[in-house]
Amino acid sequence: MIPRSLFSPEHEQFRDAVRKFIEREITPHHERWEEEGKVDRELWLKAGEAGLLCPNLPEAYGGYGADFLFNVIITEEMGRAGATGPGFSVHSDMVATYIATFGSEEQKQRWLPKMAAGQAIGALGLTEPSAGSDLKAIRTRAVRDGDDYVISGQKVYISNGQLCDIIVLACKTDPSAGAKGMSFILVETDRAGFRRGRNLKKIGLKAQDTSELFFDEVRVPVSNLLGTEGGAFKMAMSKLAEERLTIAVSAITVAESALRWTIDYTMERKAFGQTISDFQNTRFKIAELHADTLAKRVFVDRCIALHLDKQLSAVDAAAAKMLCTELQCKVVDECLQFFGGYGYMLEYPIARAYIDSRIRKIAGGASEIMRDIISRELFAKAS
Image (cartoon, rainbow, N blue to C red):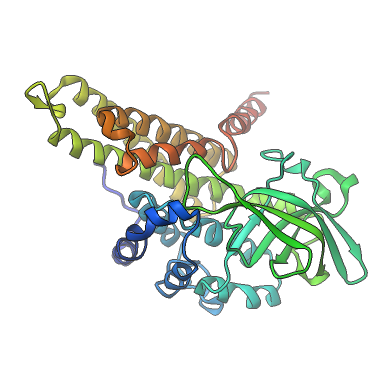
């Protein structure tokens, strides 16, 4: 393996603490959470106490004032353990980041310390039944009425939807202005007119609650506007590189983990008088997958370094997201084959990784959208 030079001893100390937390507080309960469709609320409080939520927030807002690598470590260790239930990344890397970057001082003081402590859970309300990757097509309306916005509409596929206390909600404040007519508004889930819909049944990520959300003339004060009116699309675009990088980090970690599980299994499992690992086909296929994973790990680590220096482009982040999520699906599929019938049993982590991986080529921007982003940049430079 090529040594990774990103992390300091302090980072590795934090990694050890995260790994122990997952082993103690998440892994023993994950199967039950998959059956129930969501994690225990108490887990969020424990995670906040252990520093697993929003570590890169300034200390004044409840964080460690740490760098983005602390968030990377949490993502990696969750991926390594197959801990797909807790929606920590949406909460910390998206919702809290939006509030920290674009929020007023009052909004930051009100929400960020609670989010870092796990006392308030965040969700990001973007996707609608008629608007997925095409964010400009959202229909949820926020109409100004004196000192309030009155919000009506529907969201779907919202992670943390069953548990959330605060939603960064994408709304149309000026439907005639296209992308410039979209705003982000903070919506508390205890407001009249807000309703949680079904906890959606999915083929994977079964412990991760994913919901429909309904807004029936929900009234919120104008002070809940995040940033400027009409600024949501630009704000979202500015954060997509980090979001897609985080997805790539998770994807490459799962691919590495699947290879490790498969090597261990094939060295123990016997067929026709020898271990599965003794067959040349096994060794060649594992070598091929390892080389592909190693190359993309180096690319992802380079993207992380660029992001730390605020130099990661949207195009490179799209490439990392596309390559790593497609590799994740390929690796878990081909590794599962070596497990035979056991690979189809949910008691084996490779089976859960298989069903959990498919969403990665969709969420955060479908692979086809990533290709479009990359190709537009290439052809624009060539013209």
